[in-house]
Length: 335
Ligand code: SAH
Image (cartoon, rainbow, N blue to C red; front, side):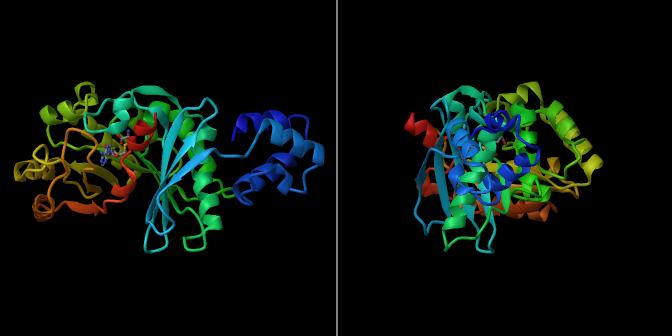
């Protein structure tokens, strides 16, 4: 799908065609323009030729899995991953990619190993949500629509800031998917200028920070970005965001065996993120190379220390280890 081509194809058409075609794509979920009989036939043919609604994809996981993954092939044959998580309470969360590959080189991440290829366009980001919306629409066993979107797939969303924000506006559009800003989360490795910019956005989108280490020495080893933006600066930016928005911030913390999961790390972390609007999300590491996930015992101990210190903690249910759901695992293998 290419929304730029759609705009071009509609130039010279009456204004209402824009709304009409958007409804056909995002609400009626058509995948062939001929299925929209309110459009004149020559226009439908033109649109099928210049703005195909076909999404080239490969689906992984079975109908009964709670997590499904799709590999989408883009116009230039590059591939990106997107994940659907079906929750018991009826929510359906889609995890979208924002770049092909990633330049951030976090040592634990499979996407980082692929290197950086390019930013995704607005259409390529929105298409990932559209793919799952269509899937849910036709699958009777599942929730009937996407309820939440998280920018936690391949890439660093804040390096593709404008396209990410534009894609959020489309996902949020009441005449389209109509997914509330409060149900959309953007996760960053900690780019401070963009966190400051994000704090001034009108929409109430959630912010998540990939922390993964409670001190500069360890964080710089795991995440090279920490050398440019050390923890004190990062936490200042996050404090500023919290003050501006009065919104909760989620800190993602991967639990990696013998690396960042000791009781000492837990106490350091508790000191770092102790604020009323902070919460920590513990994620069992999905092994993709040299590290191993922490044991259940280590995770429980770690969590209890945080709780005792008054830190709000949630533990991410480890979705999709059977389908290589960790970001970049699948696209990395399929290259
Ligand atoms: N670049 C952004 C968003 C993409 S990664 C960021 O850094 O936040 C989304 C989340 O998945 C991040 O918290 C990332 O650290 C985490 N992640 C990366 N590799 C993982 C793995 N193998 N297992 C579990 N989580 C992983």
